[in-house]
Length: 337
Image 1 (cartoon, rainbow, N blue to C red):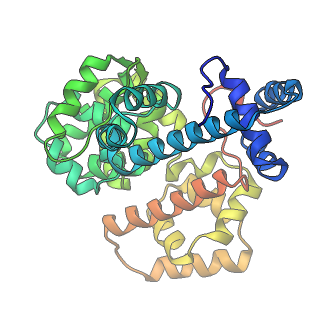
Image 2: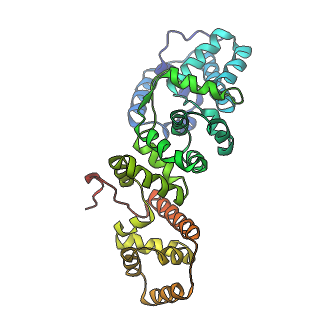
Image 3: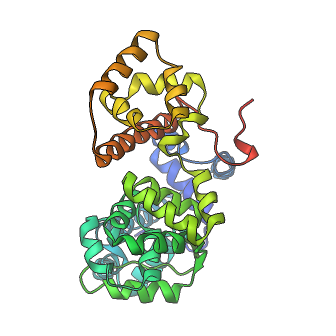
């Protein structure tokens, strides 16, 4: 029978687990830890002289239960995990395990919604109060939130974007109340501490996920409602016209990467400043070809231009994420020297 490990600390249990798993597995675990965690764990391992077999069995069993509980949460939420665990290890132990997971892993609310299609979530929340919608969107993945925001009525979009930007912390009671609205059809999760939601970065992530037309509509409305907020958001975003802020090397990299038809379509209605800086980073022959094509192409639909600009901006953001180009944003911390 496995011996009780109730008197052991979390670090001692982790040290015994890694000793039991062996050096190869332990080395792979170390790759996911911070330097401070590695230092503390290594000191703990070095302090272990001998590990009794009963301790090993107990700690491995606890670790297995922890992993299974986390897997159950990811499959169907905390409610589902608790039900399964109660049947397997008893109500008291299941409650202890779930409490430990929700406090250490910080399971985020609305986990069920992140697994659903944006259109499904939209159906659940579109008739709710704008503050409720803003709360839900601030917890979803940016791409999901962007698609949902794009699908809401135009008159609501700027208001909800503003509410996300100005949102700070939300109490567990409020989160639980909003989750209850949705739990009739989907599983729900909850957290037991105050969680940071929304803010400028959240709304920037959401706007980066919407289509170009929605992005412009929301920013223009915010410029009227709250010019300071709109300016702060724009500082942290990258839109097509911001190409003029990039250095020559970045623009040349973008020109090589994007589709020529998209670039030509975007430049056809771009400002002279944008055209000048892009053309100055092309070969003379390429500039001549572009200008000739643009002259003979005739009128274009604004929607087609906006879609082309969206595709180009997406590529620019991908190049920034991969470190191939640098985008200087608002504030002195982003100055490149």
